[in-house]
Length: 377
Image (tube, rainbow, N blue to C red):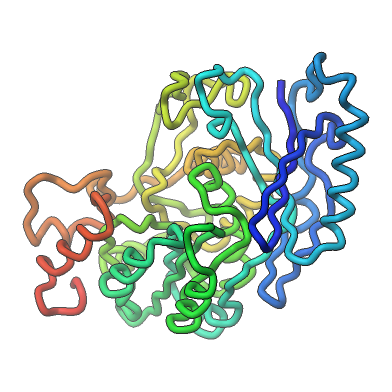
């Protein structure tokens, strides 16, 4: 049994949560006011209509329905006339065990959103072959500094332009003024007005697809890559030169992964949220690369696929809806879920991506492999 609740985030980061049980009984509805100009990227209307399965109204809440509907209507009226207001839908299961934080059950998706910090023209002007999209916490300035000084420096590989952007949401722990200055200085910061949290990674990923489809239409490929990853850009570009230009997504393919039913698990999903015992094939979220026809297709697929907060699984579910499967890399060793205990220089030249302990380890590895050389050949 599902419960809808609305969460409103204004520019002041104040949060008000109001449960609503029947106002949107037929799914997610509304009109997006987002535009592609002025730093705003909005979902197209067809992304705002989502169907849900199962009854929405618990018997114990019947007497409260009219009150909740009235309160929600007032909030919707406020939101429609307030600049910078973001409407999120949160879907939570009532079957979550009491010892589990309800945050683990939340699935959220923005009906209206904007980019506080945007780079609207850079990607179109550069016309890159490959765009690296790096989700990162706003407060993690050290990770961004290290990435800029290591693999993000690889901007021309085999005569092809490679560019990067850091994607983040809002946080009370980071100064938006500092982020704005950082964005002006480096031209690589994207900040949406969605709250930056682990449970909002699915939102972050869908915003990434939305931004890519509208801002980088001429790019050939993009890669979603975490900030604690060693990336061999040269090896990646060599792979992509020979790769298909459409319906292509590759990385570390996960097959036959069982759904976590233990409430203590970080990746717990109850049967009421995802009834299947095994996930379809998906690409581990540490880093996956895709052809640029897929972002728009995945956004359209998301209209029909019930969201879960585990973002890499959700992308896999959208791929399945499209009738697509992730492509296995030509060598299984190209994407590594952890750094081996012993490594040599030939290891780093042979892989595309390796998960490290943290971004500081990236600096050490890069220095060891490259020495005084600025790039990894």
